[in-house]
Length: 400
Image 1 (cartoon, helix red, strand yellow):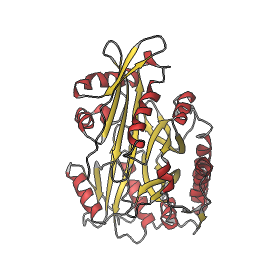
Image 2 (tube, rainbow, N blue to C red):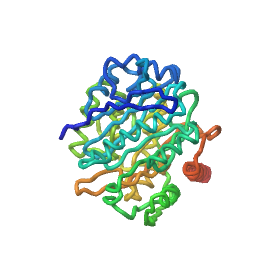
Image 3 (cartoon, helix red, strand yellow):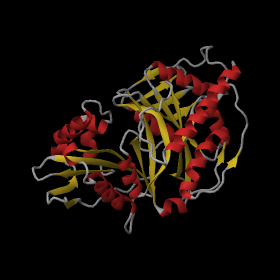
Image 4 (cartoon, rainbow, N blue to C red):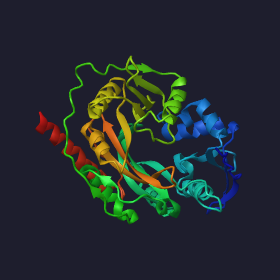
């Protein structure tokens, strides 16, 4: 795999009142100042390891797949920070951890750093990515949603109760597409009715085509109370390397989840059933990165995984499902993994086409939407998800 050749970043920003700032890359000597900035804004509640874990921070600063952009004032104080990370194989990037010192808000510093990162990754003669996504707190001001829209980000869904800073928050998915991404996109997804509710919100924002809707009807999974799936837990560095090995050997279901790595695996004693999970214990957020199983009832197996996940402190569990596999969407739905976001052109396949994915989530606490700052493009996703959620609850009641 090629190594990214990132340009050096060193630019001057002149504010309206004449103050001069420097926009530059993060270096290892900046680490204490970076941590201080995030502590100033979030207290001790910020959960992302690139900011909270010294080793992970040092890794991100030196890893060529990361671009960490800082803004420094005339007193050499770090006043803004934003991170980009790239999956080269998927030609997909993510921007996250954007923050601005309260003393410097109102100067569009985050927008300026975002524009610079997007220019490096999406534009030029040899662009590195086809698309960049961001996960944005819905407690942010409406002006920030407008700022992201002004640089090309499009709302693609929500993540209900995804993280806890002061309290559990719903976040939004925003994606910045290049024209290449949509030109390469495989069209006509095959969707179940629940997924179509989310797709129909996303579709007009990008001018997408009608979906092929296939409904097999909700199936009640077999009981998981008979002890068929008695999971053990393994947390160790070698879990990550085992995951890459079995994934690359083609042994996993749901094996596409870029820019994440497993912290633990759940497994049965005979190793016939293995689940690799990305899990941040600080806020209860988790993602399924791959499943190895020969279970005849996959929905029942996913329900058992959910029960085990909840027992070890996971509050929110995410699963990516192909937008062209209605049967697998139905299986996820039957196991209470409900569609909450639609991600067009997310995966680059071996034939050079970009495949759509459904983001599904299983939340172990009732979602609540009080206090959200919803942009006009975000609100319809919350409404669509709530309709899916209530519909699933009604089906549960009807089944009992």
